[in-house]
Image 1 (cartoon, helix red, strand yellow):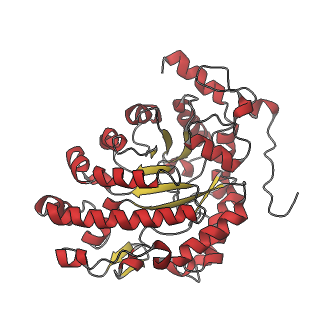
Image 2: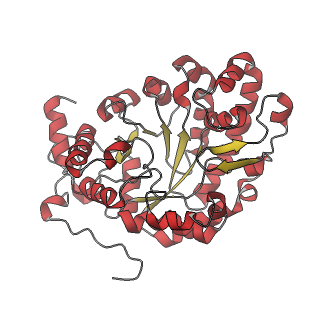
Image 3: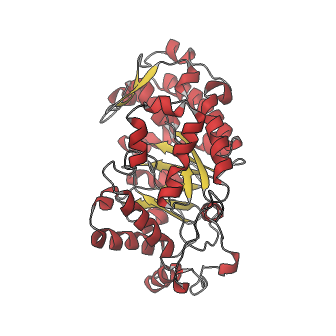
Length: 387
């Protein structure tokens, strides 16, 4: 085996997905993806795959001893500002966990550097903005720079990672949604209910829309540049959308997401992630997001029905289940796969990020389970249930 080459999965013949056409809607395996990168990208196009692709949010994080060793001497920002090291951490889970994608090691707050906004990432707190935005003058001072000028180290890391990965794994870039970035800018730090944000939305709608338009432009530039640097799929994190009611989301957030997804469409498939937002799924679908990543609070099949089978879906195992013994985790993961029903377009993931206490061995075992799951079995179950 050549150095850096990913080992072939040594699966029994029955586990190699030799027949995907046993049930309606499943195409012949001869047209399926044949390597991890192609597998994940095929799923994003809702095409047949040889196995369900899988990766984990926060897979390059505190659950990995190798990562913890680095964090003992470097802060997160110190790590992401070193392209070689950032690329190394980005690729780490591909070798350690056998996942089908690497997600660039970065933070959603990074665009603030180019915007001229001072911030820090406090341990145990997260992003903290020094001067929260509450006035029109502050919004008008936001700089909108070319993305490569704002955070050149990020795009250098992406180019290095893309070259190292080859077809061993797809490379995922990401960024905050306009709303979630606005939450940090207006509130100043993470909050339970983002009351200042909601007050601004309702009390000063003109200022709110000015801020959202500016942030949409910044994020669009950043994500397009990530695609140009090698990202093959783009995930938009709307971490705090769940604090909104459906009407407010539809009127004051969705139009900017639609603008963002329209801009990204020619460059790379995009997937929208939010949490605590089952009540918003119909409105999320209306934004035109090609893919939707859902948390564990709603069964996958119900979520997919709400967003529509014309888009791909990601999820949605409860991250806490990874902390459980294998006899508990295994059937829970299989239940998620069965709910996907064998339809093309499912990417397996957790419903949120990997928890710090997760065992990497358990994660790798979960990856092997997902890859070996018989897709035709899920399809037959779907057919019996009339789904």
